[in-house]
Image 1 (cartoon, one colour):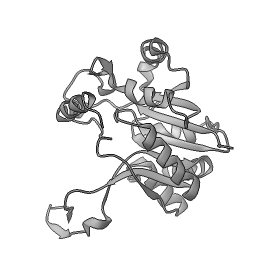
Image 2 (tube, rainbow, N blue to C red):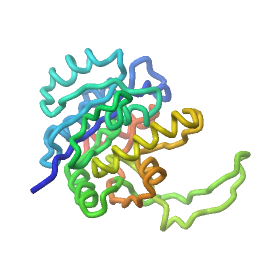
Image 3 (cartoon, rainbow, N blue to C red):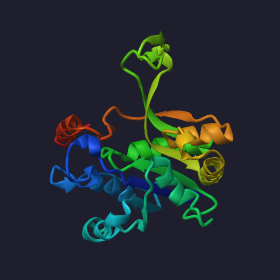
Image 4 (cartoon, one colour):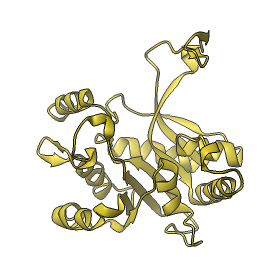
Length: 244
């Protein structure tokens, strides 16, 4: 029997790099708000049982009325306020400060950027399969480019073997127990050392750092891009009118 699967969709960013007064999650892509696409994929998935949407505190009422209710996203069971950092937004779901938790103790959590509109059922199915087998995985694609590691002054230090370099995407999928424990450890670390000392950039790094778990790279799609800059919208618009 399949264990319960929860999608956490993150849409709390301000999108400053989009150079727009409109938060990027609400910008229109082919006539629909950007956040619609991830929610639509989750709503129609056979893998996902429920969805928790994280957005800006001041946007909660708007998102509930104009996105969730208007488009009929019935799997969205909670709309929560995000934090100033990505990890805080995830922690508000998985390890809230009041000690509660929005996830069942058993099952899997799929953490996905709402700014990645091209989530597919295949990506969900493949990451789920790897999460069941390994307990932790991330959607990713092999790097097409050579990557350089530099020092703080921008001089190259070394060149990793491109065969071992991956571009990490979302969803990032974990056993609920892994995610809960890792983010609780992160919360305690913040209390001990201060937020300015925390440098985690994605959920996998939280699990790797605080649980010492290895995370499987699940081959995803090069179309699963994140909308970050104005150029990305142009690419996304092309993808919207093409079949994969």
